[in-house]
Image 1 (cartoon, rainbow, N blue to C red):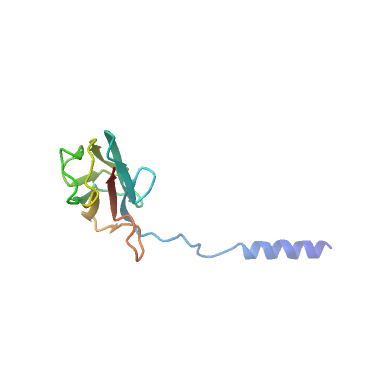
Image 2 (image 1 turned 135 degrees about the vertical axis):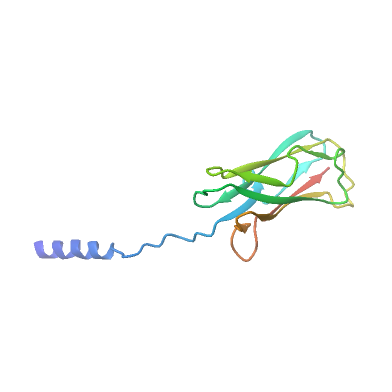
Length: 152
């Protein structure tokens, strides 16, 4: 009985040993989402609200600042100053080492929209200073852009 227990312990010990453990995939990337992680959302046309959208870096600790470029693409149904105001100005965010999330803030203004038009505002990542992957790695390019639709 003692030999069986010793053999079982030896077998368990050998099965648990691996020379190289899998460390996972490490493709650093930048993504843009809502604060809840969604890649598209709806804003109602009857509210005045400042919403925060998040550009995030998924990477090991960076040793130098990362500059992320983005663009705001506005559908023909929305007008700046009437439907929304960009609180975060410019088209770049700078991530200093140790910073992994940066906000883009948009103030939504109460104003009805013409539902026959394109009432979307898209935040699209266009590049970065360290050539990190844009969006979540994979063939679908998820979270490379965030689409916000304003609805009545």
